[in-house]
Image 1 (cartoon, rainbow, N blue to C red):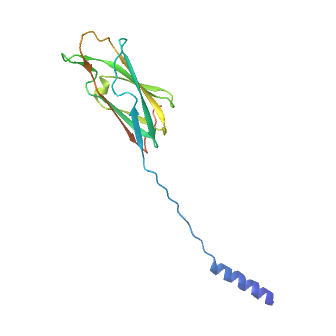
Image 2 (cartoon, rainbow, N blue to C red; image 1 turned 60 degrees about the vertical axis):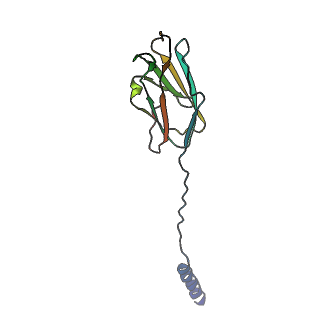
Length: 155
């Protein structure tokens, strides 16, 4: 009988002494999305092509915006605009996106749902019609990459 009392006392004491604790672990890494062009000044070849590559290092999904300043190659001596097609592709993803330069006059967006650590993107330009007049032609394509945790993929 004495043994039962000691055992009962030990169980009662143990119940009052135990406790639980929940630990919440939190971590944070800021978004980073950097890119550089291997060549910023593209010269259209005599066959009507130009290309460059972008080195991308992004630790989250991203949103890419592209816009053409002129909507094509602007001829220096007139208001003539020569159209081109721009094709955008990323080596590690399947598929590509092609835009006509006149469509790029307004900002075009590409959502990339994959995370691209140290990836390469390729930009290829192809003239719709050959350049025929002597002189300079120019356009500026503005590309911006922004980290986006809610970005959905298009590939």
